[in-house]
Length: 337
Image 1 (spheres, one colour):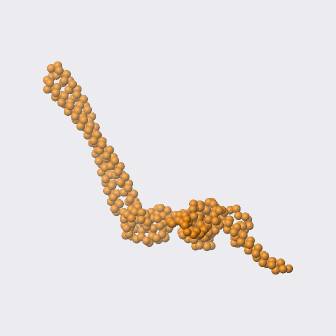
Image 2: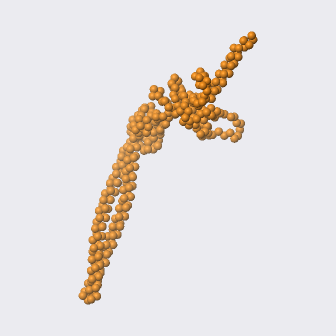
Image 3: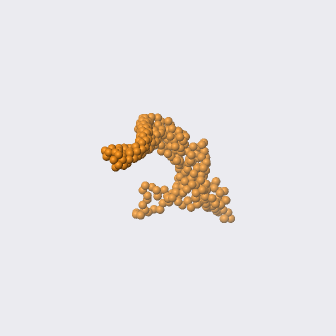
């Protein structure tokens, strides 16, 4: 009957052994980590112009919609610059009109000069023939020749003037192109004096800026945290990743909402362990070396965000990935272990 006395101990040993085996099986098929944090797209709001802040349209931690105005920089200098470039464009366009009129006049002069030159040449030829027959004096023939030469010189001069005006037209066309580009640039800078939300989300740290502050180009003013998509960066031990693949489902418990379960999907596994991307990567070539299990970031997309439970970037998460293929008894025991 001695074995009956040992039976409770044997049962306890069997239960503990089975529980330990079941625990490791569950951990193998459902790897879990608490080293995980919520992330979202963050846009740093920065001006593309320099100037004084004249208006701030939002307050700290406010929800904003894409296209909503956030901050206004003093637009006066940029408005004056636009007016100047528009005036330069108008002047260039007026000069184009004048050049076209001059070209039209030069073409008319050349047309008349060509007729006069042809007539003068014929008159000179007839006068030379008559002078050879003694019907005209040599002086009269020379006068006709001089008239023809003068007509030819006028034609050449007007043709040169036409070429010069056409060259001016080409230069002025380039000037107009440059003036139009300057107007477009001035309009762009004027429009950039009002900063708009590029995405829908929550603005933060707006209280760091004030009306009257001077801001510079590309100076970060405050972040805008997008709320269209949230994901978790889960840092898994390298030994827990042999079953984890993109496309698998995950269960997420965010510390802010311990009684609510979020669902997720594995999007990708990082190409390296976290320490491989640090500014000072580990150097193990010298000295004593101790093997340390590394952690690899795994991106898990939150597939069922709930407006009743607004998410905050940087908050802690517990992530459990369902790698699939777990035996039925493992699935059945999982809620209890």
